[in-house]
Image 1 (cartoon, rainbow, N blue to C red):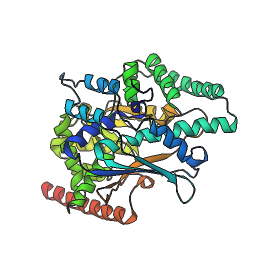
Image 2 (cartoon, rainbow, N blue to C red):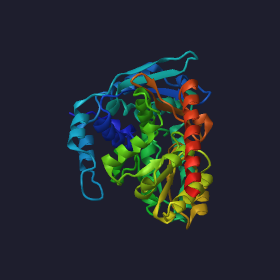
Image 3 (cartoon, rainbow, N blue to C red):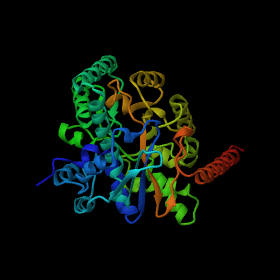
Image 4 (cartoon, rainbow, N blue to C red):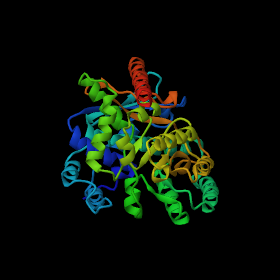
Length: 413
């Protein structure tokens, strides 16, 4: 008999798509995911290790038959199954690795999970969504909030967003809010409303369970995790870690063809991405995802580079997904209208805007086979990794950009 708790309730679709690439390309890689709270407030104020552990224990068996059946029924545009039977058999046959939860030196939650990459990967968004679930439930109870009043405020704010977007059917967005949501029940309520009230705008959801149960399109490709782990694997092999970036793109394309060819651009800075992204990849990939730095500056740079390579920007798409609110979505859409196709991955202010300050924490892949990972965001505060490794990667990025500039000069001459 299936459990009522499903890991897909806290999973983004890109965890499943990345998982299959990991399963076929690096099934034995041992990856550690570590929680990092970016806020001064302590998560432990409303979440104890025991509470979180008990919640995760209900999900540790992993995938349930109905969830696997849903994945098995998904097809690419050419009618082929998105996920191989071998991968699905692997998922149904394996529990998730153990999770270690304790208090850190400042008394906050310290959460870490280590295991084979194609399995441990699923804990990231599940742990994040479960922490929020417990945190806000306990916060409301302890501080005397009325859930009815909080939901009423959330609906009032959602009403305003829906009213604005109803007049803008040209603006398309997807739900990217699983990890940062207020709760699963509120998440479902929001998605039911936007699906029903904004049919011209709403494209789909990254949440696997809601896509399944509400008959919506599942949305997602890959996250920073993939090039970060590939870089660490290259580092482990004694190669330039940055060589892992394009290897990840090549492996992704060999796994999915052009079906899921939206490239995330800021794992090692956008400047490095554009230096590393080949003309052939620019042509064949459908588009790009922006997740840090100035969105207008990024979009203009993308348009310029596409044109420089003889590619019509109106044949490509940018997915904007960095800290969006409805005003920023409208501003970006207006700016790029007629210049390049844009769509939006809308997270926190869609699924956690009820008048209570959302949390700001991440759970990142921090180590692979004993080698540290690094992320060099276009927003310095989003860098992850040890200081020494961040400096090493930064120097390697500078060297790569200098070499690329020299090559471009020689070509021009």
